[in-house]
Length: 144
Image 1: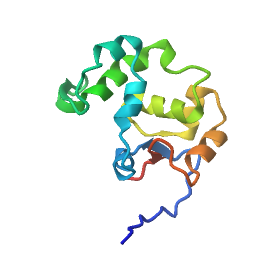
Image 2: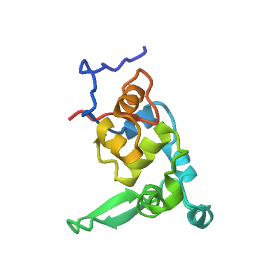
Image 3: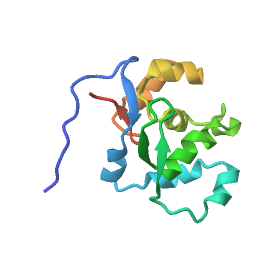
Image 4: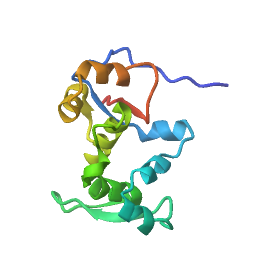
């Protein structure tokens, strides 16, 4: 029996926050680490060639000093590779740019308006892309 998820009746607007829904990746039977590996800087591509796919590491939150278990690959992309100039360029596609911005900000939900400020692209275009019927890279509205 096929199971369908209910769609939200709320239509996203320019202020609706979006995030990467990692459950979407699992449901679609897709491995988001493949995309993460593609985002590694040259230095880390070589250094992490034998890094285990699901390696979890301890990370200390600099604000709360709380120790958290984090995906090692995601932590490296977020804390180092995302800080490199070539991580996000004017030639990066819109969906990839939004995905990279979310990763570099620890997947903190952001609105089309906020993405627009980072990318110098119209919020309306960003919203139409993210709020359409197709889900790109697990980027979905953040519903509390």
